Amino acid sequence: MPSLLYTPVGTRRLLLALLAPALLGAGPAQAQLGLIKLVGGFLFEKPAPVPEPGPSAPPLPGSTPEAQFQELLKQGDLQALNLACQEAVRFDFVTRLRLLQERLLLIAPAPQPLPVVLVNANALLSCRAPDGALSVLNRFSPLQGPERQQWLVQRWRAAQAGLHHRLAAETLELLAAGELASLETIALPLQVRDDGTLATRSALDVYVDHLEVLGRREAAAAALLAGQMPGKPAAERLQRAVALLDQLPLDQRDALLERALDQAAAGQAWGLALALLEDQRRLIEQAGGTADRARGRLLVLSQRVDDAYSEWRLRRQDSGQGDRTAQLQQQLRSPRAPGGHATSQP
Image (tube, rainbow, N blue to C red; front, side, top):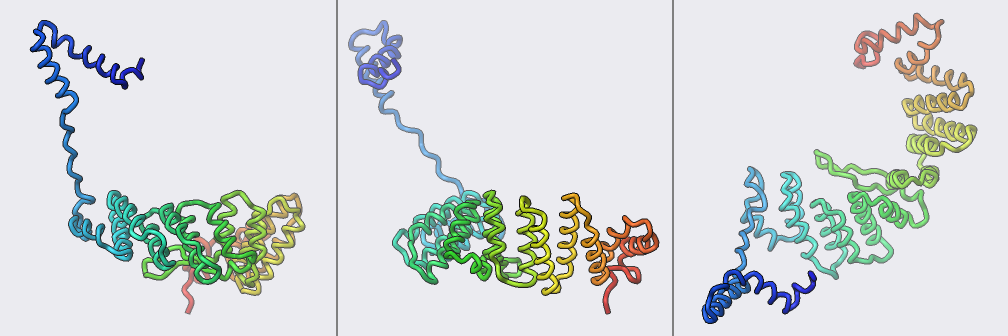
């Protein structure tokens, strides 16, 4: 029955049912005239007027005026639109962001040279549209070489911003081209600091982050162990690999920690060495073993670097070290007292 209403017969029956009460008692001529008027009004009634769109943003001090923004939206180039996106984010202008995103998806249709594609994608990232940036990047297929590396880094930025961890990991794998160690020499841009400098991070460590999110712990540890940079970076990666390989036998994890300690010592990263020895002690004790050697080394090293806190944590468990424990505790409570760990150095 409902489908009958959308046929000519159904529409006619509906109109007659609606108009019958109004036409009862009227003569044939009057009824016909009334029917024409009512049906005409029903079928040819003017649509309601569409309201005029309001301003794209409130007139806040320091923001672009509405008329100027509308002109920029129509005539502005990619650089100007990028700056407008940054302003819209700063003032949290949701409507302007949407309008800018729509414009940026249309302003430079394919085909375009890579520099234009990269600038367009960057503007969309500024406009909080990482999926739009990926869409623009997918219009270009770079050849092997520097262009491909630039394109992959921008693709990673878009995947990272959109929390597409699988795509981000796959992109970094393409960037590595089968040599994971090469990622540790690539500095990925993270954000621009307040002072205008760029904060970066090794692509190898970022790749491990994505693998961890995806639950690929063994692959993440393997990537960390592929690093070749010595000193503190190697020690930090070995420490992280041990934490990921929690199913590995104790002796193998302990051997990795020993390697990490050697690297920390080579880089004179004594604070990191203390953390590694603490990891080693905890690892052995959790496995039911006796960690006297690790405790002894931690005690010696804490004395060497004058780390009163670490030494206090160890000695407070020994009833025969009450005097030294009290002295350390006093230093911790009064860090700027003579001998305290926060005393200014000459």
